[in-house]
Amino acid sequence: MTGKPRISDRVGRISKSAIHEMTRLSKDVDDVAFLSWAKPTSDTPEHIKDGAIAAIRKGLVGGYSENAGLLELRKEIVKKLERDNHVDAEISQIMVTVGAIEGLAAAVMAVVDPGDEVLLPSPTYSTHARQVVIASGKPVFVPTIEEEGFALDIQGIKNAITPRTKAILFCSPNNPTGTVWAEEQLRQVARIALENNLMVITDEAYEYFTYDGHEHFSIASMPEMRRNVISCYTFTKTYAMTGWRIGYLHADEEVILQINKAHIPLAICAPVVSQYAALAALKGSQECIAEFRKHYLSARNVMCERLERLGSVFACEKPGGSYLMFPKILLEEGKDSTAFCKRLLKEGGVSTTPGIAFGPTGQGHLRMSFCVPEEEINKAFDKMEVYFAGR
Ligand SMILES: Cc1ncc(COP(=O)(O)O)c(C=O)c1O
Image (cartoon, rainbow, N blue to C red; front, side):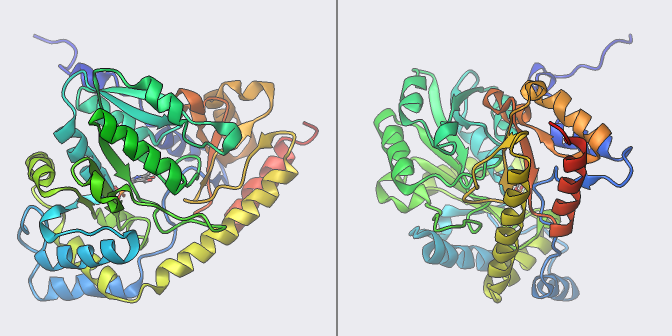
């Protein structure tokens, strides 16, 4: 018997990734200026590569590690959490994951039952919504307040809670807006979670990339949140280790035991060679982080200056963190961000990401990444100045 392949409704409902679609379309455009990926373009620092090479040579990477990750690595993660996140963690509360993404997926799997609602302050990183759908949960987009720099709408979060609400999931510094939510706002979110017995799942991928005095705050540093928070981190952004697929999460031991049950069928363990690279990253000099931050800050400023010159086309506040911007499109034709984005690529030669990919409140916006060399930013804006001339 022939017919359509038997695909689950869950996966069938997931739309194609706009970022991958823009990447595919970009291949047909000559001399494209590419601002679509939130992926560091720098290479992994040498001492990190050396750590991995040494482990390969010693024959340490051919087998699985403990599911939760190498003990030595988890010890270093505990130190890092205490030093940089003010989180008082134990080794038994750490699980090393295949990037932040697998940690988030395992956390969502461990928390969400079919039909459970998960609040996503929006615009939001599209993968978070997909992870909720894959767990048969329901993503509930709670708009942030754009006029206040995409601040959290605390009352909006309270209003969105129903008897089916199980968790709040978000990233700060934010993808796609670059907003760093203030400690006071995050403390309010924590209080709401405690009052309603919700889990808070945090994605802290951009924790080190904050500017202009904005500071990253980890909810797990609040002792009273111990049983209600799962915090996901990654080496991807911090050490330019995208392809190594290595991250980790922290949660109360009781919660970790449950997440580990989801982690095993997803991954068994994180790639062992990458765990040794991560160990070298944590044990070695941290100067590379400051260098990356300096580069992103300078690139952000170039992008903001260039955006200002296109003030009749885009409106944008300076983002306080990450390496992403989310300008509003002021032109009438920008109401459909997908069509606008595709036209800008085809006719203007600049690849960005349509705002609608980040939830309904993203419509009418574009996401632009500044984790690229400054020449790429200037090239993109030179092209846009020609494309939008007279508008
Ligand atoms: C907010 C956020 N979380 C997670 C990731 C991916 O992290 P990882 O490579 O550690 O899986 C990204 C990548 O763009 C991201 O923007």
